Length: 79
Length: 494
Image (cartoon, rainbow over the protein chains, first blue to last red):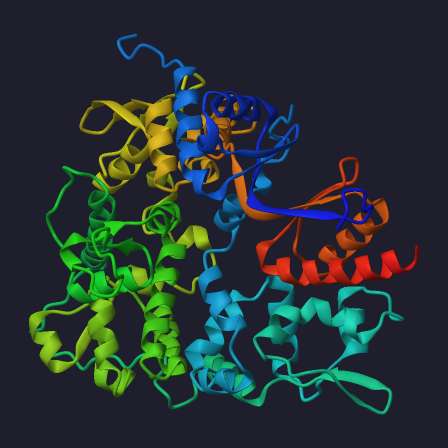
């Protein structure tokens, strides 16, 4: 099959993540901090979708939660 | 930026469940039964009466209208009765009596000449006529127990207390099983725990195989939390339906057991009944129901087959969900929620406090008042257990203090409900689905494959601008084959 075949189709397996664009930016940031095979993003699809490797789904969820927790502030319970 | 929509928060699936009628579990069961099942439950007069009560008012009116008539219900009559256009097709008119059709009270539409009519089920007609006139010999309204002069009789209040205590102790056990240092007194009987386990309301977290759970180690599941927030009558019917399903799985006749539930629903609080005459051969079901607080028996009564239904039983089929609440309406309305997330709960009921403790940070506890605050940490912890924002909101709504109604609606301030929804959204910011990505160069091939994926109901996402297609892994092979065929066709066309 030549590279110039106009009917060529490429298929890749993964997990399609649907999220808001802020969360997606965090995912891209997390991915940028990783190297080589540790990277999880297969394809940055659009503003609200990203395709990642399926084995990393749970890891991505927890690291996103951690990242979000860093940016939430509770009212001081003593108040 | 994709913003969450709060324009119609009531439309969430969790809210829809909560808003459903208290007999929804029963309805779901009945909807799946064949006609023969109805033929056998309508032999019980009590069942006929209860099913009639569960119908919507217009339907009930129509059934009663034709009950004593020698004529069958004609579609022309029905249309005149409901003020519908007389040129309407009979099928459209049938929608009015759809609930009664579903319960096989009216049999399917037939026509004599050019007249369309729905015959009334003979068994139902006989049953309901007997119920209204007091004829019939099936004892389905219960046979009073022939009481001796010195037998002690509990008062209606004592029966209510007994039913309430037994039921609440089960719920309390469920609530406290989720806590590490919860109350561990009053473990329900093993058969009750087994039912809670089989229905998925509780699970053993250490049981990897899922086959031999330790009944002592059961803890509440997310389904169980949702169950706790339901109102009382929904809970009762749900448990009864789980019980019925369990019995059915063991090959027992569901119709007989359901008739027994309906009979209990028609009994009177404070009256004692004879088990052997009311429910011949069904005493074991009464034994089981006793453990949930549906019936009360004295030591002597157990030997002689005497039993008292409690208010849990007698209000099962009262139709009015408000009237059936065990507590009076005022008792239930004890919560004041302020816009600063502070909650004041005027209650001393341990169960209510335990439920509040699931998502409220309780700060102060007085004998009749609990003060706490909805904070992020506690609400998120509750959400991790599987409670949705909609359920918390509907719980707060249904328990709002009368004082809360003095403000303009909505009862709960939007700032609080919105925040709950936001916390809920925060929890699932990522939607994930296994997917196969296809990248195309040809627009033609992309369009055709997208249509094919849609036909196979496996399309996740299509981006025409980038010619990217995401499909379900289940249809991957089918789509690959399709693409190969198309490629051959298209290349051949060059």
